[in-house]
Image (tube, rainbow, N blue to C red; front, side):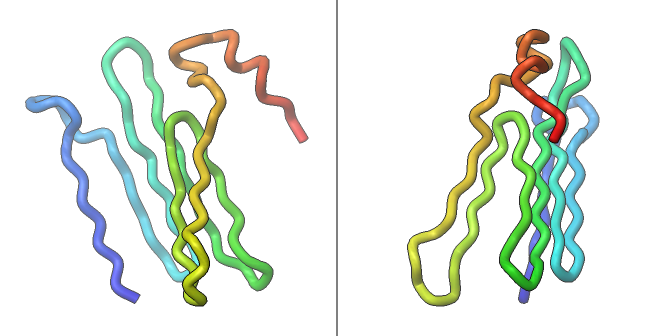
Length: 95
């Protein structure tokens, strides 16, 4: 498998706040956001024997293409971002 990662600052002249990493069976993306408060979009995917496990927070999206030509799997988080709406934290419950 070939993997290519690329990123650039969202605002010219500001530091790049993104982070991406790929290892066999897992990948993670932290998409930093500025200026008012610290925040990030978080996307993580891990392959296992029974399929994939994933985490998609804020405005992140995960797309997976199957080898058997089924339609792609697309997963998006629909919760409001807590950094924008502090009350959004009440939507999340510990499991």
